[in-house]
Length: 156
Image 1 (cartoon, rainbow, N blue to C red):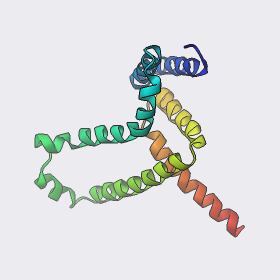
Image 2: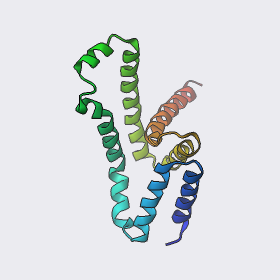
Image 3: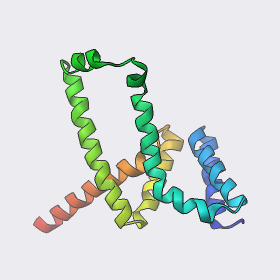
Image 4: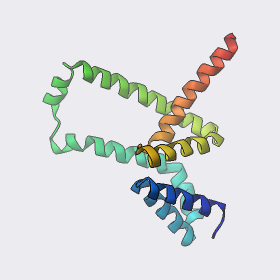
């Protein structure tokens, strides 16, 4: 039971505790619990395969709640398009979604980069109170930066 992955998770828990980050601590509790009850071999592959999709779905549900409750309606949508901030937000949403798409491809095709992306996300969550959507967006940004560096190396 006590192996390198367990030690790593305990370190992450301590970092989460120091940084007062409940999300990291809960994630570690769940993963350690699954290991203790020996469900890890059955559940971890499923989480690894579907977890990001579930997370995106849960975030999407949370974002759509004001529409479902009626707090945001068509009038608000029409009023918002009069604002240049809304147009900036719209363009940003499109841009981030495209970045995330490339990030998914990068994580699928270069899994060794996942470690660095996850560590960067954990550091940001623990020490800067960031939000753990970082691996996906981080992978997308990394993909763009890698393509840019490749481009520069080709012309140089």
